[in-house]
Image 1 (cartoon, rainbow, N blue to C red):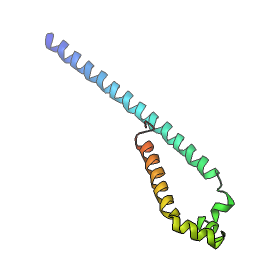
Image 2: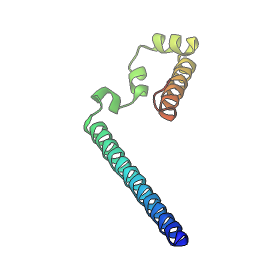
Image 3: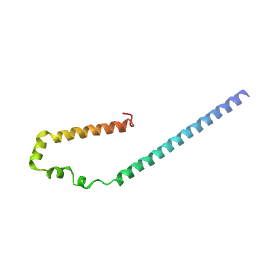
Image 4: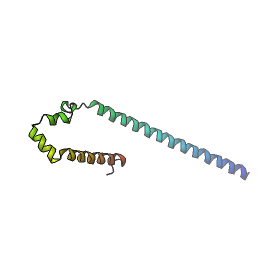
Length: 104
């Protein structure tokens, strides 16, 4: 009698454990589905934003339109290195925010 009760109890506990596992898998799937929909919305919003006309030609054409004396001063002052360092810093900050999920 005790063996029967023990086997029944163990099978009941195993059944409950399987139900809990199924619920957790379902919640994980729901979370992933919602996250996928949110990311699809973000992609849609970014695709809906059109860049300004002056950016379509590139920054090189903007500098070529400047007076040659100004271009010479900017090249001597190291503007290209400064923009590269600034771009690297912004990229690092955005990647850090992405990987830490906005904690920093």
